[in-house]
Length: 349
Image (cartoon, rainbow, N blue to C red):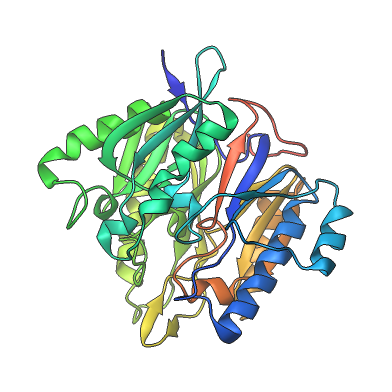
């Protein structure tokens, strides 16, 4: 029986987050800033739909936040479940549906982006733990693959990047066809486009959720760099040509590829950060996009308002989380209501 992975703009049953607790990354001022960021994000999400937050066993919600969240339209649930880090997009479950509409969980292997950032043993088990809690069957695949490495529409098309499929401490290059087949099988895809690369500075090896996203069935938004002196200029030029050719092959004159200028290049402790407006998330009736408190934020906001006139467009400062290499999409995982269920105020089709 076939499996289907819904488009993110389809109606969601919940959004999943993992609260930061890793003292190696989140200490002092960084800790205060990331906690404030998470409380703000949880509050935004709880206006539109249920929110499930994974927390350590000893987690205690501050009294003020407890009062605020108790008044939310959807009271957030804080679920004790041990994680190693916050990037639930990558290690969390893929919520899929079979032909009869039965929800299941797909699990790929996770090793912290090619064994770059140990430990990951707790994160790797999260799909099994969530499946047990929700009493869902799990279909496991033997290949290393992260949630931020795939982007799908509602018509069986998917986009990924080559360095996320094969490479050092990932899958062997000789297995590339097997990896592609497994992804298509797991997510119900009829075609999978493999771009040559993602954004510079992305220690995930170039996740697609920083580079290009579907905003409707036949329309793609992609990160863009106008400055020819920047390292992202040529790779994104190449991506645009590939994306346009591919999407037109499927949808002809109805196909569209939009470009959204990436933020001014940001560095932290000498490292280039993969800041991108593509790392947005869908909620029921809303879209939340990352802001970086700079000049291109307004242009991104204008783009999203133009494309999604029936959704509330909300920006949130992601300066605290981008320092660790990710943003909104990286730290969240959607659980859809069903396959093909339309979101409130949806204009994505």
